[in-house]
Image 1: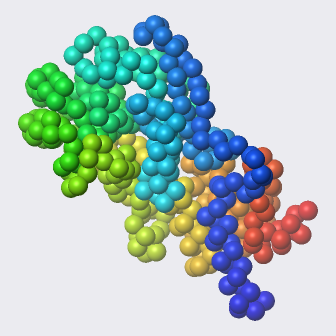
Image 2 (image 1 turned 90 degrees about the vertical axis):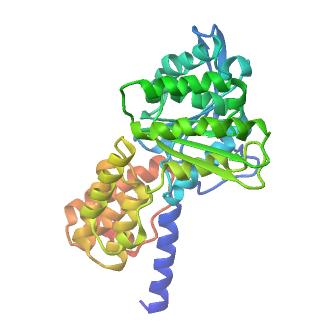
Image 3 (image 1 turned 90 degrees about the horizontal axis):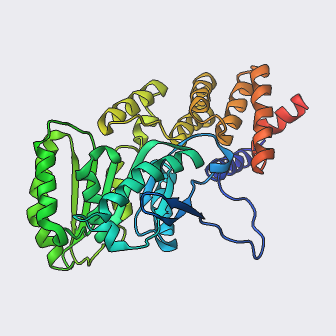
Length: 381
């Protein structure tokens, strides 16, 4: 095989590795599905609530649980925005998540604290919605909350009422001004409690917001800064030339919340599997909950060892670890079969070759573009 042809095969292979989770074929007039409507009757609110659910790419062909991002003011536009922001995870910058957008019925009743509606709405979320999502979807225990304007005010109220409701909170242009004294008293009450918590809170607003928003935040934020002594990881972003609810608020919030989640590329090329595990152990301690190394990160390490370094035994160890965390991952299963085949371990190569074929049949993935795949086909069939 000449060098140019080998290079072409490698390029094709790398493109395949980055695209195995994408849809491989579409037809004219096929519907574009971004999520599903779900109706849930609330005995607490005594009304039916509409949920818009968006699932991670590859959800149907995997068995792994996912964190959940709850989005207030939920409509189709917000769901699309949230899915787009959450899918920056494709580049390794945050975890893949299930998105649950909660549609409004009576917005001010639910979102503006200080009355009866806010407590009932929060109780609906924590006592009815959380169990429903865990039952119907593969949700893990990590939850995040996003809201803007009055919904951003509710995000802060939820945090102050009980920080343990969510692992992370993102509030865009929260209208503290509507309930400034009430919210300041809530913050003081939390400060007075003898508790500690490792939670993340992100607040974003612009200098061209309604004047009342930054004015109220100016006196409220110092109280939140005091909560850092109890473990709060607080990040505020003030954007010049931005109006109420700055564009990209959720994406900025997610990237800030998951800062450090992306494994540094220089480590991948200088350290091995042990270093990767240690990195995510340290990251888990930082954020206060267990975080698995991303599938893409483990896969890149294994690909580098297998395709570039030709270190088959270390690559095998990496892909075996990947499949412990992500048992149905197509790329890692394929590459593990190739690793064993290159290492002349034919029995495990056969095992993962046929497991790859099972995944292909189930998920309709395209055939891997590796010469080893064709060689295994001749050997095992």
